[in-house]
Amino acid sequence: MEHSKEGRRPDWADDASAQGPETDFSKSRELTGELLVLPHAGSTNDEAAARVSSGGLRPPFSTVLTLDQRAGHGRLGRSWSCPPGGALAASVVVRLKDPAGAALLPLVAGTAMAAALRELGVPAAVKWPNDVLVGGAKICGILCLLAAPGTVIVGSGINLRLTPEETAHLGLHGSRATAVNLEGCTASPDTVLSGYLAQLRHGVERLERDPADAVAAARTCCETLGTRVRIELPDGGSVIGRAIDLRDDGAILVRIDGEIRPFVAGDVTHLRPAVG
Image (cartoon, rainbow, N blue to C red):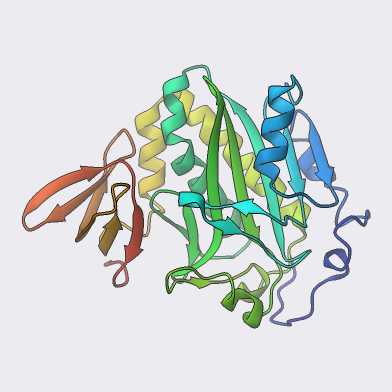
């Protein structure tokens, strides 16, 4: 693994459709049922959903990816886009034996991405429920789409190679963004994706074997725990408290004025660094 702090993008980022040792995704193909590499896409989640709907992408862990996503979706209907070659967008079709496990897939996917990045020397952690951070700055977002009972499209957008100026345009609501290269790692897109796919497969197997064990794994890398947080709720309200634990169904437990309350959904802001 090479490490660099240079701002110049590698050759693979100059043309997202170029094929070669960095962009043929040979390692990732070994971990997928079917791998579709698009020169560009509006949203890989939309592309995957359309193919699943028409009967395509049937093998487990089939994946649609691009290095040039132009109209990606974030949580709460937010748009997400990145300079061509600056990020990898990948949508993995996961089929679960127990459809109830779909509720935990965002946590499982975030945990998988954080683990894959840590293997590359990038000290990533999860912000509940599914953002991946490095030093408080967002490096990856996860968005899961229910395609059918038990079939979930797990979309991820990982910032690979950006300049500090480009990351400034990716932050939302005062948040910061970072990228793999800005954290000193120049791993190829295939290396990043294959590491994530391996961890995601392991995470899904753990989820199907024991959902509580999947949540326990998430606890070990969840930066939100121990942190004073503001949670913006789906109904437009918000609460402030200290996140103390994850319930076995993935809900976050927050102590508010001495009362411990569970939240299954919400947009979290860390109000100060995690304790411990």
